[in-house]
Length: 143
Image (cartoon, rainbow, N blue to C red; front, side, top):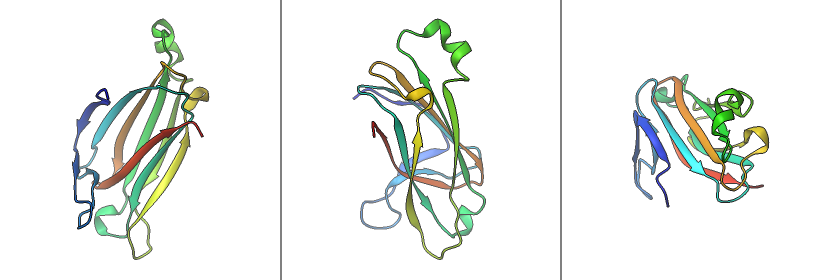
């Protein structure tokens, strides 16, 4: 599998499968960000982010901005002008008032009809408020 993490600042994979803290990709500082570039090996229409929501003080006012764009295979010349049309932004919150911590799936449609074989899916994640966030998983799928 090729490397897909193209940049990271303030995020760290940590945790345990059974005991606390549970395994995940954690942001523990304001403005933490990371980027992925995934070459599509199949038609891909959706991205799902499994994130933690919690009532803890460290989760208050946490918002993750997710910016997704599709880079078409062989579309280098048009990439600069077409980037706006092929991009979508989503926001995921990390706080809720229920007195428990839960993992929540967030399914997002990829922009511009999704990616075809050979296209690249570029995703930028940025903690735009708060200083703590947990991603437990990511999935890219056709349906």
